[in-house]
Image 1 (cartoon, rainbow, N blue to C red):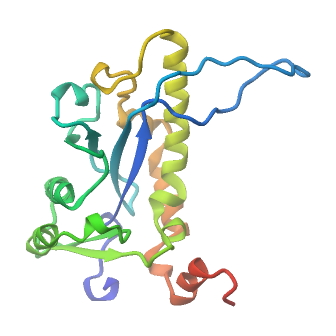
Image 2: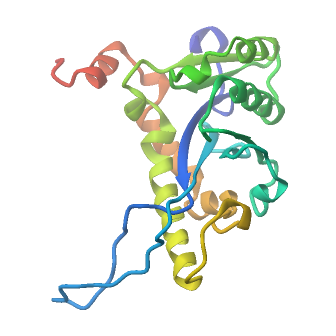
Image 3: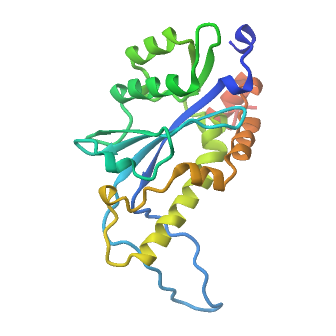
Length: 239
């Protein structure tokens, strides 16, 4: 596929979904006096709400506006306060990506990636069932989007977002949630109160996402993909 269309780096995209909780459960590092046996830390008592973020990046180091999914019956405009310009959000019962909302994502992708039949793009993604929407595939075909799925159990090695982006972004997000909880004691973290609706463009810029994406692409470049590497992802015992 790469040889037949000669995609440039700016036309090779990777999309992946990941969950962000309004109340992160994992406790980060705490600085204390050496030798202290007990160290206190403010933590939220309520259960968090999981929000799905679909992030799209390309091999040249740029990213498209995020796509959000909220576990609510109805979408409210206040959910998108302080988010990046161009971001879009939808609500469903679970808050996870499904085939219906992947259609909305595909329209969002076409709007900002601007592919055409004369200038097609390559979209790399995992083989989650939500991506198997006939309507979404029709939109992709009509707009010159070529979709390539990673083999099962290989995304942790082959997908740039998994390799180098989501880890640092989530670590920074959790630190910001912890800072908010520390300065807003006795307040509940809720989506509609925008407790943790940080501007994701600021988060990505903070980590110089350009270099994070390029690092992931160098490690998981589709140009260096081969069957032996895929087999190793599935079974490390394969020589």
